[in-house]
Amino acid sequence: MRQSERPLGVPTAGRTYVQRLSPSNDEGLRRRLWGIGALILLGFAVLSVRIWHLQVIEGEHFLQLSEQNRLRDRQVKSLRGRILDRHGRILADNRPAYSLLAMTEDLPDADVLRTSLQLLDVTIEPSTLASLRTKATFQPISIQQDVHRDQVAYFAEHWMDFPGLYLDVEPLRLYPYEPLAAHLLGYLGQISESQLEQDRYHSYAPGTMIGQSGLERVYESHLRGVPGIRRVEVDTYGRETKQLAAKPPQPGANLVTTLDFDLQRMAEELLDAESHTGSIVVLDPRNGQVLAMASRPAFDPNIFASRLSSAAWNALTTHPKNPLHNRAIQGQYPPGSVFKMITALAVLEEGVATERTQVCCPGHYVYGRRVYRDWKRTGHGCVTVYEALAQSCDVYFYHMGQELGIDRLAHYAKAFGLGQVTGFAPQREARGLVPSSQWKRRARGEPWYGGETLSVAIGQGYTSVSPLQVANFIATLANGGTLYQPYAVLRQESPSGAVLDVLKPKIMGQLDLQTKHLQTVVKGMWGVVNDARGTGRRARHPDIEIAGKTGTAQVVRLGKERGAKGQALLPEHLRDHAWFTAFAPVDNPRIVVVVMIENAGKGGSRFAGFAKTLIEAHLQGQTTLPSDLAAKNH
Image 1 (cartoon, rainbow, N blue to C red):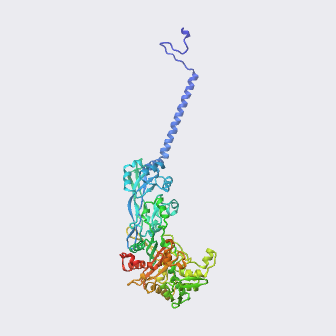
Image 2 (cartoon, rainbow, N blue to C red; image 1 turned 45 degrees about the vertical axis):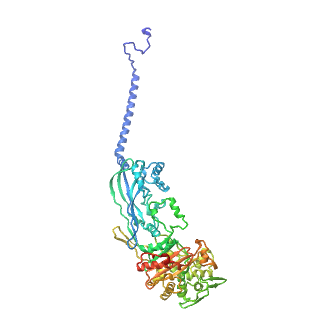
Image 3 (cartoon, one colour; image 1 turned 180 degrees about the vertical axis):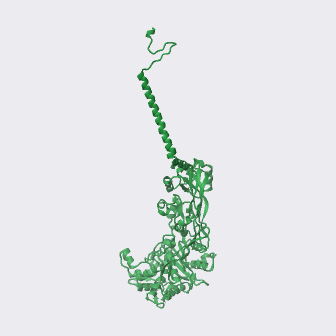
């Protein structure tokens, strides 16, 4: 190819070929370079401004976030106050135990958490899982208390498998005598979501154990104390590396109760001797102090201390005899013949009869077309109020009830505190019922019938009371007419023993009763125990003057078949309840005892020995049950 034919732009060998750009192309290139440079400079400017803003304007904020990722404030539980008997015996205490806690910020998702807990053989309750999802950052939530030592060892060895979880030593509630006074002391339980919304619990965290029943609930704010705080540094796994600062917790106040440990233990042993269902109440009639309060069946409050599972809770609440039910204040029963003291006082105060008035008892009483029978088929003969009380003659009180009328009976019953709450704080009380003509019109839309008054006069019919109400009624009778509010706490003390608060007796009413009428009724109660024909002779004591009263509360009407034979044919839950109540010494009463046994099938005379044993223990210092319990008390 000739040189002139060589293609344009192809260099020849040994020569360099350079294409010259036109002036217009050179200017365009410069503009593009300037644009790119400007964009780069603008980017650097924006980045510089942003860095300046982050470091200067928001620097403190991000420093705090950095510190939060490294630091944790961990709550230190305060030591819950002890609960003591009147002599200083510990009824509720604390012990150290490992707790498994979670920090919400460090937790993985729910599935990973469940897997981690399965490795520890720990089951998380749905309510706790819900709290983990909603709780504020960096607040620990209790997963399980009282972690077993094998679980602690496994956790310590495999701690990297449990992100967001940690172990801490915390105080755990301890009831050293297990079911002793369980209903009165109460128990702890995990705070519920509804409770967290209440003002009184505004400072509580999910998973916190609080008083849910009894004295533990009523005095929660006093017993709890004030939690402390530990500021700690953690690694990327949320594991504590060192403590930076600490604010120690303040322990709660101790409660000194009115309970007498020995009396309480004996009352429960008496009920346990034959696995009775029922209750015993012991009061000091001089001030309303509760010396003992036992209810059976009972429960061990220790099972609640480390958080009860839903299954275990359901087993308790569906138990046919409801062991959580405090029969002493929540049970409602016809008072039976213990009501006869009300009828007797009303008769004397209203002038319907005197202490010498006699009523002849042939074993039955005819009212209209109906025959009302006495418990003693052959009758008691002609009796005064003394003999009617001592022998528990129904016919005498049928007659006097007819003379009085229902509304006068109701007036005296209410004056002694029956059919209304006593004001006893630890648990919600059953009100019971004292019927009247007005009540029946309002509740049932029916008039009151005269025959119904006869039933009320002997403590049957619509009337229902709690054992505590009966104990308070007998205490008022024993002390001459002063109605006290029963109470269970003497004082609050600091951990060092300094007295913080003292509770004093509270008078709820003063009955204006003639002394001679009170003495007549008390004499009749003395005859119940000490007269040769008295129904409560098993309570007789050679050295202590005891006054008492037996009672039988019908569950179903048996007519002519009523009695031991008829009762034995009934299913247990339909058999009569048994009452026995007593106070001593007669001339200077210092103790009142009420025994109420459900479905005993027999009258209260069978349980008069229970009261005798407790009175003897209190007045003579006998602190152990007789070796032959059955022989002494049955």
